[in-house]
Image (cartoon, rainbow, N blue to C red; front, side, top):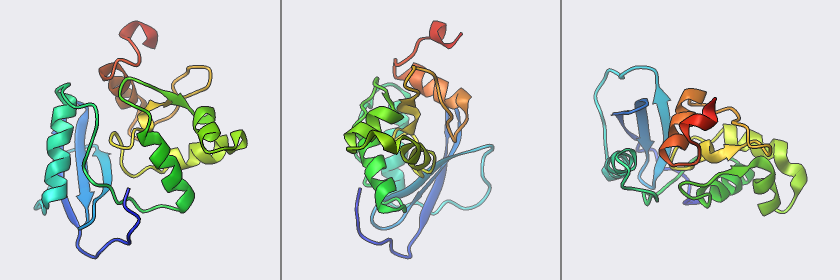
Length: 166
């Protein structure tokens, strides 16, 4: 993740994925947000090289060919949130971690609630893989994109099987 301040140039596009429409936003430094939309957005796209790279990498991910994203990131957040989001990026494809695991990586197991809050405010879904965070007991926890999408993503990555969902 880049640490520089955002510029005023904002770019955006929308793409359809197997689990719904996604809004991709970037500035001149990196991807600033990636959200699910409930329907196709109307309006003119204003892409740049970063939004186009993001869209291409997402298409490769959904087709099963990409496991690591390389698009530059520039999310807005507090220093603590950015630390959590950086740790999330180290949770690889096909893996999961708990809030406690992430708290321990950050050096204090008492941070689990703060980690949960930062995870819930992650502005760059999938690429900063907050969907890979599960409860310490292995239960699926909330997901801003909806639990149906979290289940789909975890199944897609082989973290859970269809049978484990019931």
